[in-house]
Length: 496
Image 1 (cartoon, rainbow, N blue to C red):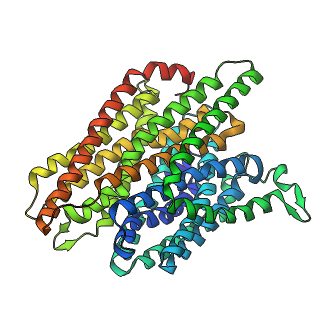
Image 2: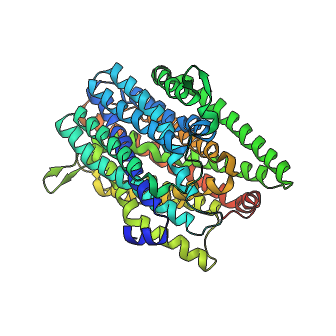
Image 3: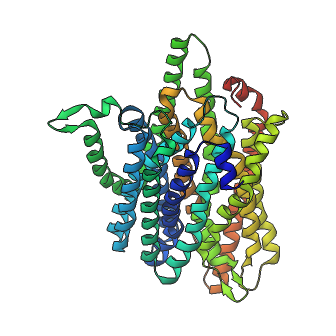
């Protein structure tokens, strides 16, 4: 679908949000693409330590929208929250240019808090561009998702190449400039999405608390003091086990309680069930993304050590192999966007639980493909790069069955007065997934053995063992979802 077609069929604000999110993702993925290799090659960390730091960082990135969504719902409004997030993320990227561990961790803290404000609330604005039961909603979110992946594609090619070729600091600097561009587009195009409700600062946010300082000012200043907390949690990442579990239990209680109150207010028995369904989908989402997010850790290190990346005499940087995922998203995204609308018109659109099930099956098959790649291993114990091409292709088609559909689903399952909170809860499932993904990557542990060839062989076999185990476990999870399709649909009360 072209940009012109999208503008004709969807609200004008969609394209403004598309490009704002695209450059924010350029910023985030630019950082993420280089992070593991930066930790291992520049800061000389071991694979396990780097994977755990990566998992704690990306986990906190996705946990932060719980705070960002709640603050926007109650005080800040969606527009100010997105802008505050963009500024903090840009500052974070530029702090990393200090090129030492302390500056890196402070910068990561700013990126975490900034992402919390930006990510949940820009997705919420997209949902609010559409009226209830608008059949364009899933298509609109899929188009928005293409924007995410255009940014990711640019990051995993330009930022990855610059960072590995000329120095990591140049890659991080480029990512920061991308965020400033996203902020500019969001502000200058604000009239295009002005019809979305909830954009303005709420009355509660304007309330004075100390002299001229109001609640909005206090939240903005307080956000800066959360950066050292993130620093601590990244370094002491074992604390995340307890924090994420407590957050999941707490947000589940909040969702179910809010659903029960909504049922009493409207004298129905719908919202509590829908919140239970949302929690079930959060658990499914965790299982998918904990495995999918091996892209930034074990799959990147696997590419660095055990994949033949020579293409016509040029060796592709290991971090650039992450570009296959956004490339395939862009290639297939428009097809999926049209497909869901066509299937819905003829009554053949799979239920949301079945879409999640089929997505997980494809993710599993991608990991199992590494066993096939082993049949073509070279003398350096490297599998062909086509192994990663087809792995990422299957992971991408699986993602398109699940991720944009999940964003749209949250806006449909949740009561209007807590859309930001529900979206924050959804991103908590990504937080847990990323953290668990770091722990899974830590199990690969790098290469073993004594000699160079033995080390390469042992490392390859260890990677293949982990990847195939992941594949088999995912197939079992998909089978369980398939069997529970009808009970989950019943809890959703007609949401499609």
